[in-house]
Image (cartoon, rainbow, N blue to C red):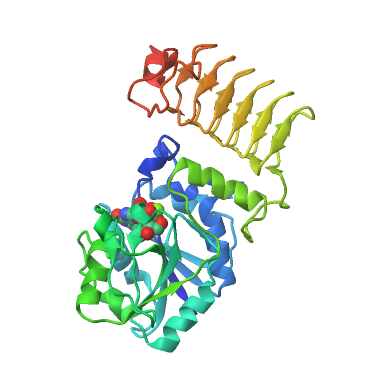
Length: 380
Ligand code: GDD
Ligand code: MG
């Protein structure tokens, strides 16, 4: 028996508009809801029971895994108001069945990683630590929790999202996978907002608890941004990171059942074409996530982008590193610039967006290049 808690209650703000209707952990990555990769890896590491700590769009999680069999018991703990990462762990702990001295794995729900989960758990048990943290190294640690360690691997500080250059004391970051001794979780205050990164870890360090960091340099990616989501999906499709949940053989592209790809279209770079999607003749699609029901018309060229559910890219349109919301319709002959985000259900007229004339970033609900209409104005 080995139990885990999965933190999946965040709003996925950096992935809007993709996360308007779908929680980040359920976005399709390499053809399956992202969590399927994490659940399959956890099961392979001997985890037998997982408590989902849900909040945002909580009701969608149970439905998403109906009919799946990971060989895991899935249990759900929903927060009425988001309790933060520490509060969520504490709230989920009411569903744990293990003893106070047993190890409990905790995963952020947006991490694709090759870490040896079983070795992390066994190392924790062997050292009698209060908490063991998986750490990885990144070239720019500013968006993460910095975790310096001493030569014995003991964590000496925890600096979440450093604000000043002086705070950047290490390239080791919290990789979002922990082993807690159960009794440590039970001491987190219940029923209120707590950040594990800003409160629980610093408090444990101040109390001189044994907090260990295990640096592991295998594959690691936080899928919290569109660029990372696209990269993670393409890396899975190309076999750069293994997943027992990949729904097909590795290769240049993955085409899901029910998708139609014209023989004169070119797919490459780990592109995935979701169920019921269509790619027409002469289209070139590289390193892109095409969600179920989307359509890429003849001669369109799409690089490193996410095309939302049932969205449409018109004939001859080019797009590089864009995010197209569910049900949006981009007309023909457009040149979508890098970073452009089109809201769910929005419409882009034919030949109305040209790379040179358009701003480089267009989040939904702010200035749009001429020719782009949000769903609400399109409906008027
Ligand atoms: N249930 C619940 N409730 N889950 C939450 C809540 C909440 O109130 N807030 C966040 N989560 C979940 C998210 O769904 C995600 O799976 C995880 O907690 C981490 O939240 P993110 O929003 O992805 O945080 P981050 O990426 O900015 O930073 C975290 O991960 C980094 C590694 O990728 C921190 O843990 C950093 O220290 C770490 O370096
Ligand atoms: Mg994250």
